[in-house]
Amino acid sequence: MPVETSERPGSTTWIVTLKDGAPVEETRRAIASTGFTIEQFLLPASMFIVSGTEDQAEKARRIHGVMAVEADLKFDIGPPDAPIS
Image (tube, rainbow, N blue to C red; front, side, top):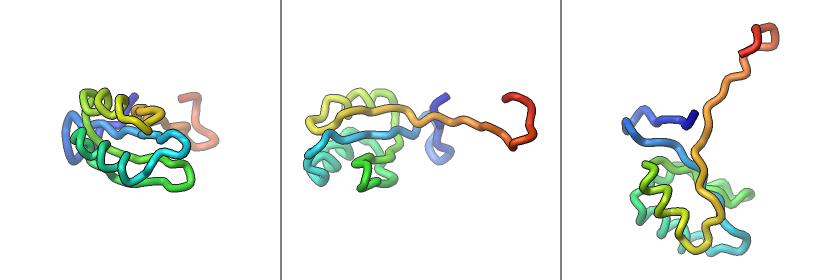
C-alpha cells in the first residue's frame, strides 16, 4: 500500500531513482518542475524521496536521467512474538 502523506491528502510518498551519471542538480530541478515536493536526497543511492500525485509521477518517469519512480510502500512486520501479520 502506498504511503499517503498526512500533510497533503491525496499526496503519496515516492522514491525517484536516478540513472548512473545523471546530473543531480539538473535532474532535481526537472523533478521539482513536475510539482513534486522534494523531501530528501540520498546521495549514496542517488535517490530522491518526494511527495506528490500519480500524474506527477508519470511526468517524472519521462525525465532524462530518471531510472525509476516507485511509490513508497508501508509495511509492518510486528514485534517478534506477534501472530503472522
